[in-house]
Image (tube, rainbow, N blue to C red; front, side, top):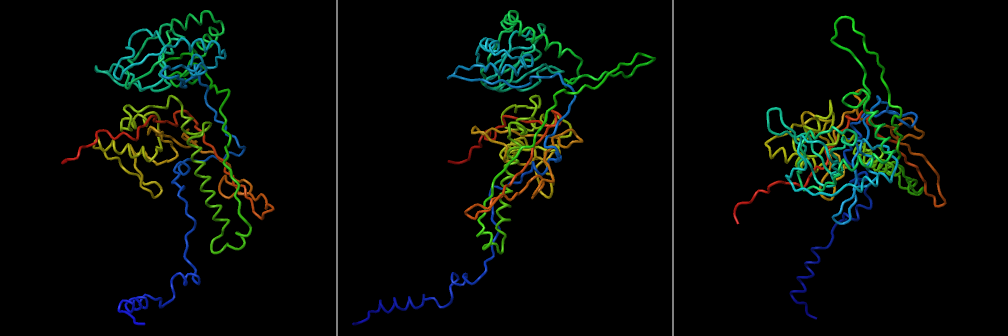
Length: 480
């Protein structure tokens, strides 16, 4: 058999490509690899847990004692809708100060039935200032700006109201109430309106409602400061020998108590894994490390979003403000800071921080930066703006920005935990061996205890309805 030139060329190529030394795959069977510890994408900066001062709650419950306050019922209303028809939820009328605590559901339903639906276009005046308050307005949807006369003419913005807010409730107990501001629709608005005359007619023939309103007038008629706290009578700047006022500081008879919340899981590790595959890294320690990281992430999420003690749900309604135009502007941030003294930190979703940066750039402003524990973070008016991805962003790309004063000495926001737990692994976090089951799997109970408390209402403020998807005018590219 003859061998062609092409066959000889193929044999030569195979000979040249033959392996002449030990392969790397083979070598690895005798080598000890250099490996990393298990990595985890869920780990975030968790600034909230780092900057909050922590109070050790020995008894598991933390009571916040305050001065007696007469201000009640500063909540927001809720609505239901069937198609385009919007209705007020009767029980939500208790969020009006004058109706807080009123128990008769039938009367509340009768009041809710007397609200009628009205719609206003953007820029339309809903009511002018100066006239008597003849109706109660409940904003079901949209944004309303309160305008007042400025000191030197023109109009000044007195506040922004949005979904769930209300106007005119003072007329329920004060027949002489007048509109002190003009209400103007900033966006298209759906407003439910209750004629005051119909409410008074219902109160005149309902003894329980009339008695409730009388009790409310008596409570709010007591001396109080501008924050609604029971007044402390003082005298200053007098001459001669006038009779000095006598006083005492009254306390809230039912102070709020915060119980420590809990986050738990059961970690399962097979004894064979712990016995045979424990070098060079301790399998149990690595499992615990990642489990604890997940628990801490959940802890921060709860401290922001929990309906009982989370910051977003525990901000006083008087400390919640709305953006004027949608995106977070320097004006909005200034108003947020002006609501409290000595704001220490601002927490915002990274998307909200980026949106604020865009608004500053649009105005030619460049916020400064601050060093926080070796990290450079943006700041506004000297207050650090810290990222927190636990603050939710809605499907319509709106979110909230939190500002807070911290510490017990400053009557601020504090974190709550308990140290010295049995089998404590980290402060207020325990790892307790439970059992080894019939499958030779070890079970460890991993538990974290925590909560948060707002000592006085103005320690915590929230800028709501922050649009993070608003990019303004998109610049046009030149050329085709």
